[in-house]
Image (cartoon, rainbow, N blue to C red; front, side, top):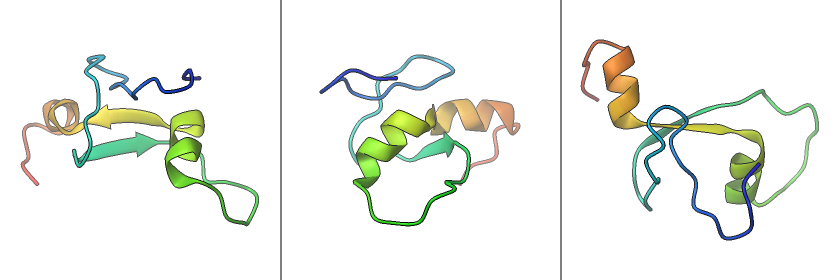
Length: 63
């Protein structure tokens, strides 16, 4: 869980996620339907992984 106004960080390298950066999010598909604030939902329910860490895991494949 993140605190109010705390920027999200990569779960692998602990790098701060910047605006407009490509990230991957590991999360469970939600059970409920409805509208919510997307950024807040992702921060609360997801685990952010930066593009550099995903490239390391996938063998350096560029997107």
